[in-house]
Image 1 (cartoon, rainbow, N blue to C red):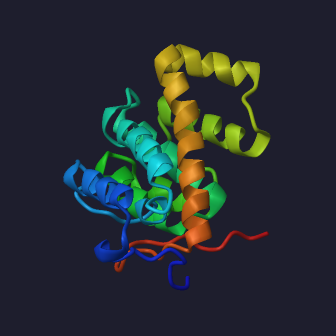
Image 2 (image 1 turned 180 degrees about the vertical axis):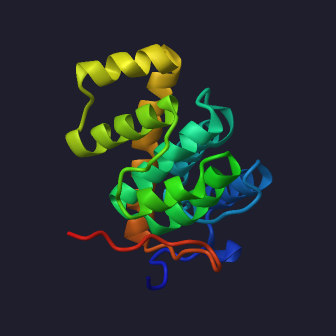
Length: 187
């Protein structure tokens, strides 16, 4: 992957709105400005709204961390979002997703040995991304296993990280040194 199209602007050339957003991001739980937050500085008002939604998904969602990270990996794989994959693969493993599951998703293969909840999240995220919706039986299964609030969170999580993946791809955000990257898709 080549150099990012939207490099971090020097603070001296940032507008006041950009500096405020940068400070807000760096002083929060993320502690740094990287990945999608660099290009988002170009549109500080929208960038602030996006980063606030991201804070919810990173730190507050009612989805258990392993399920959330599984959904993010499926989304990153779908969009071929290298930076998103490289960061969230580590978060997924740390939250309890087996490395073999991550590796299968990276190869765009059905993972083996998923729990019922993991299988649901995998199927649900794939359906949203590939079919642009979920069938009635899958929705019923999601409601039974997760309930209303978590189904809404799961749906929007896939959409949010899809948006972020597209931004990262547009920027050509490079993978962090030493982090895993996705193999190319076959076809």
